[in-house]
Length: 499
Image (cartoon, rainbow, N blue to C red; front, top):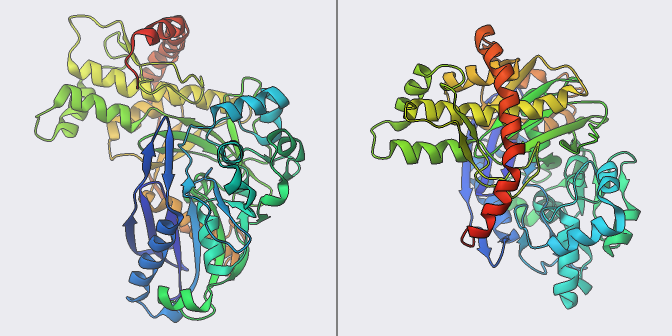
């Protein structure tokens, strides 16, 4: 058997997965690293930790198979990082990661110079402190001597690829998440670079996710336990890798990823450039395709928080909650929950929004409250799907991530009016997406369509007609509740303690 190793460089650590060229997951190995949170909204990681995580997990896996059977290593990487390297490839600072929010002033400069809608039309994204270009602007202003030494600006997986191969590259999907890539022309936007005061010469070469970008260099190959000549396939950003791992490869196929947060995504021939800017757009791993995305901040984090509030001390709290949710009827006995405990991204893009129970009465029990929470999270995702349906019809979504909560899956299906299909090996979906790029790049499969056998779907849930009728009406109440309370949230902000 021959294999590839797919590295999923995430926020909490790196998961290396050994995948056979037949698509079967053989084993995985995880290495955790730290995030340094400091100041107001600052978040950094050591790129050396990323490299060490890749080296150690590769070595552990390679020691358990014949290293000559490992054809390539490839990557799925956390997106929107900013790492500056000097002319000799030396690190100039720790990596500023995706969730860092320090560059608010720089975001304002981009919007003032370019206009918010113009930025969205060029990049497929709203201008925001999370993107690489705004972070680079912050470094240029606050660390001018450091920035003056900068030769290249790279992301998380791209730093590791440089250390393995000596090449400064990124792929189309990762480039499309840097806030400076023109997704229409497939080139760095000179207009945004001028507004930002950042030379496009500092940005890496953009290649396909399937491109073989080199071989693991001799010294580090030995350190990783790999054979000389082991190839490196670029891979992609984690969101686009997840799309492939969810089976969203054919045109207009869609998926939902549920975890701490969640998003709805699709594979399309054109970006969804929404007049209300509800949807953002990445480039897909598959050349010529896009991955529209509606990311929400409110999913497992909110659900788990409410479980802790209502079921603290209960044995097997999650199973008990699921049972009680099932006893409450669709509509939660006339109770609506807005799940915006940490503000919200899509579809409302309002950091000041907050959570609310609307219609709470003394006859409600905790099962009603948990059902309202589950429905509220799902209705927000339903509003995102409605934005997608302004562009394409969607009747089925493959699901990755999330728990084995069948009750929630049924609620989600009825609210979205779509069949929800659970993907097998969904905990490895992102890694399988990167592995698919590798086997296509190695020529083992002709293209992503040919490699569809990597992904298997089962456990389909269809909408319940009676529930669907209830939710069709309740969605309007849910949406109206947010708009009616928007000003209230703003006023309450004056009374909140510093967060």
